[in-house]
Image 1 (cartoon, helix red, strand yellow):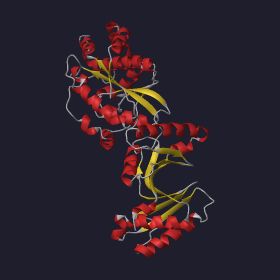
Image 2: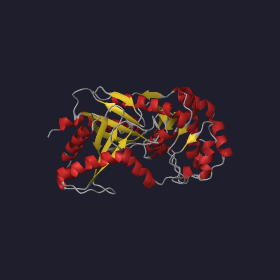
Image 3: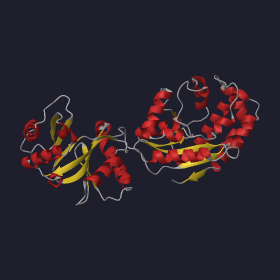
Amino acid sequence: MTMSALGEPCVLLKLGEIVLKGKNRELFERRLISNIREALQTLDIKVDVRKRHGVIAIFLPQGAVAEQAQAVAQRVADVPGLVWIHQAWRVAKDPDTVLKAGLELVGATDEAKRGASFAVRSRRRDKRFPMRSNELDRFVGGAINDEYHLPVDLKNPALTVSIEVDRDEVFVFTGGIPGQGGLPVGSSGRALVLMSGGIDSPVAAYRMMKRGLHVDFLHFSGIPFTTSESIYKAYALVRKLDRFQGRSRLWVVPFGKAQQSIRTSGQDRLAVIAQRRLMLKTAEEVAHRIRAAALITGDALGQVSSQTLTNITAQDNAVELPILRPLVGWDKTEIMAEARRIGTLEISELPDEDCCSLLAPKRAETRAKIADLKQIEKRLDAEELCVQLADSIQEYTL
């Protein structure tokens, strides 16, 4: 009994909330398929991506092996909009062929060698197939039980054999990789992330990618009064996040001299909030230039002194663009867990000279008054300064 009798390896993708989009569903599916194709360009494998009813199938070239299908499955698992990715086998639409494929697939699993419990779950998308789903379950399941003497457990099986009857073929598989869920990147527009080298902003960027935003990144460096370490971190973080969306862009603002001007304004306790407002004003100017419709920050309510409700309101007042704060209700433990899961935590924890360390008063203001902040900005000529800062940005190509 050889694995070649299983037919052709392929990858079957299950959609998430896209299926609830009604008349707009086709627009989301087109965007998702485009994102899938773009993601797979990083692999040296020519594939055929086809939309089916409720699923997307990725067919590999003739002669492809299971390891290539595995590589494709692992790559598309990073594409938002998918909930499950299955490395499957494409077999002929014939009950006996499906039976043989099921037997061979189970025989190659560790669960069968351990004598673990199993179940067969069939789905018949093509109603012309001669057997109903429950009949196909019993037909294949009975043969597996006879061949391998595995106990049947329909409620909590250790091994599930999935059979999906489609228009032109049958897909047979076990297990799967959880997808990212959410919406396809680009289906909700474009936004600009204020990207520090810390833990929060990369997670915020990822959460907004999952809601369909394509994001670009703006990093504020303390240069010339700090080293380039924070830039290296921001660059590494953007590269890590790029696997979820592709075509990411990073800009860096040399912010040190502007911070020095804020420090000499004589408003020590307001310096941090004044700095945040200037960052937002600069980010808004950049966003207008790249046609981004919103700003994104990693703020979490009450996490630090600048993130009290009063101070967040004072920051919102600085710009007209909406500021999206996907982590506003998260605590640090939750943020760190998500950063660990998406692979950014280790980079964020590397030491660097963050530009915010240049403005660290002994006591920061937790209830900043907007009128006081506007007085500081008037002395700094903040409107002109943010344009100059936007003019000075440098793009770092991934």
